[in-house]
Image (cartoon, rainbow, N blue to C red; front, side, top):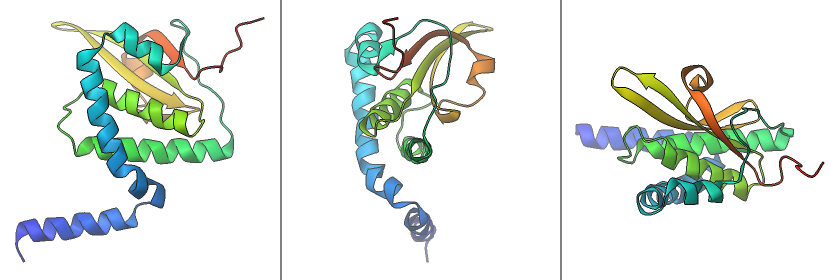
Amino acid sequence: MTDVARSLARKSRSFYRLPLFVKVWFFPTLALLLISKMMIFIFSFRRISKLLGETLGADPFLPLLRPDQKNYAVLIAMTVNLAARYLPLGKDCFPKAVTARILLGVYGVPYCVFFGVKRTGDGIKAHAWVFSGAHCVCGGRRSFWRYRVLNVVASPGLINTDG
């Protein structure tokens, strides 16, 4: 058996063991990641951030989840992060954040998309990450320690600003 055939057989066995949710959403998630990447090149950040939800400033917080919503958050995180490994996105976090937000919105799971920056030796580095409850959907759990939060975009209607 050739190396390519062995690798394909191993990946097929791994895919077979994944939860049904991940198997069903894997290829649509690949498409969403590609569409998100194209949107980022075509539209301004301001336009895209309006589509993500309600902009709430720079004070980070995490929405609370019901147990069923937590399960969806975990499955969506698994799907987005797995699909992103198979696309040549590089270390681009923004398409993953947009895709995670879309899937969380489809299932009605509260989320917060965080945008932050940090100083590096040669300038400033930006980063986007998504949390749903205490679960990191994409972008890295340690992002709060590594980046200064500049903006939080949350699920529409998550915060009641009327009173």
